[in-house]
Length: 249
Ligand code: PGA
Image 1 (cartoon, rainbow, N blue to C red):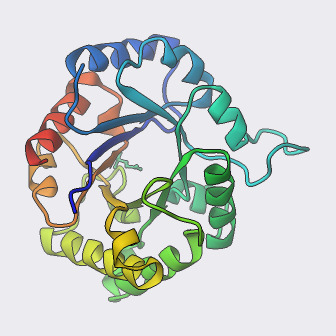
Image 2: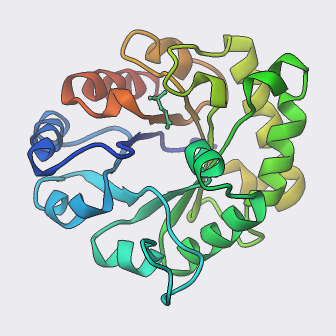
């Protein structure tokens, strides 16, 4: 099956109103993209981004598992929808580390996102120590089992493999390592959801993807796109990554 590729950008805690010129520039350069485009800005920018996003979908970077309530500082999936989002990242390693989010918490968030009509981009990945001790496949398999809700479908779920040690470091796993993890995740999804259902679910790679290494990564079997952090902040960089993904499609 041919999965439509996805180029997703995670702005993290970066960006104010002036940064939207980068989105406007990007949208102008890719009026008819051959892959899906997504930017997850800070929630404060969502509704303003809608005016300039063109073909670029918008996403949140996290959501609470509850629909509403006494959760100061949090944001619900319904609020993200209200701001114009159609996706939300959950389980990013910075959330797992900074906020102690467990697989169970992430699963509940993904479920809330899906219930609200958002596509959940569920992130997972091993630490450097886990990779060194040969535990990478076991770790990502457990995160997949724990973080992905039973109701996951190809329409409401995207999985992003992001080795913690590759995020923001300039380090990237070897081609063999990326291929091995993606094949393992695909096999685990097939075992749980059935081959046909799992076949449509997109598996992104994230962690230090740049214009210079994007084409090599996108040529790897089982890589359906990218979740880029730093390289998504500038239209020049993200546009080059999108072009590489389109060329691989
Ligand atoms: P990076 O971040 O591209 O800056 O390494 C990736 C991510 O955290 O999604």
